[in-house]
Image 1 (spheres, rainbow, N blue to C red):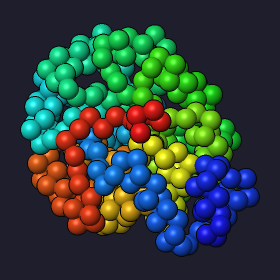
Image 2 (cartoon, helix red, strand yellow; image 1 turned 60 degrees about the vertical axis):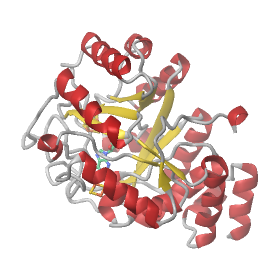
Image 3 (tube, rainbow, N blue to C red; image 1 turned 45 degrees about the vertical axis):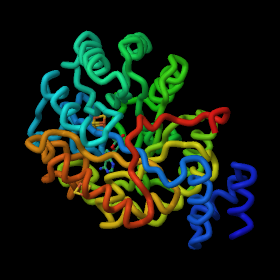
Length: 345
Ligand code: 5AD
Ligand code: SF4
Ligand code: FES
């Protein structure tokens, strides 16, 4: 197995069968190498992103997600521009230099409304990056938002395998369009993040290899990886959660495949394991995304059950996260935390 890890580190790619083997690796060596490679690029600095969950309305019906339109139990909310700016105002002195606006696909937020919000954030916080995570939109819409100042865009591809995609989403959603959106975003000039859940129903190792190969092709700047966690008011409520160890292996593999990748240790990982985020960093992740949403709405933004950090104030989460990182020998830095391309390294 060590040989395979060394091969991946050297070539940044493996054969399909080799990927399947290394995905099941049970040796600390994989994490050791991933950490070493991460530290070679980013040192022991951890970048922080402030997550502002500004709407939990969604027109889509992904079978796994608690925000799906069909979930009549969800208590819906939207944040106004003023409330969003207030989140930034809270976050800036806490050290946030990236604000992530995340929401369901909510038609209320037209291009006009979003452009105005992005412009105002960038005008008030010119040293900060704005990341959008608001799903599939048209090329024109992505372009308008980029021109308004948005720097980055997160759109998990969810699964690169079209058959598997169709078992997780209704026919109204298309895997082809999702991938097209990612290529559109890259073309426009965004720093782009794709990603997928680990352990969704029917996911096989072959599917995960498809994901790794898709990522190799897309060459995103970020990849969001977290375990699937069932939500009790969704069609997948009785499915079992994803595996933490497999998630960590995938993080480490991605680090070795693309040394400068921005790789978050996700909230979902922290939800399944009290030390999940720390373990993510020790497997090669270099980003954390504490919640900056107003405490009043946090319990309403439930993609899955038992989500952590829904009762804490932003300052409490930042303190908690800073201590967690310090405890494992890492340090949260005050920085936009941009992707480092090869020439800057
Ligand atoms: N478990 C884990 N992650 C989920 N997401 C949505 N529902 C769940 C769930 N039940 C993830 C999706 C989406 C991101 C915002 O959250 O990958 O892209
Ligand atoms: Fe909507 Fe995203 Fe949830 Fe799908 S995963 S239902 S698009 S919020
Ligand atoms: Fe939110 Fe620990 S990071 S309470």
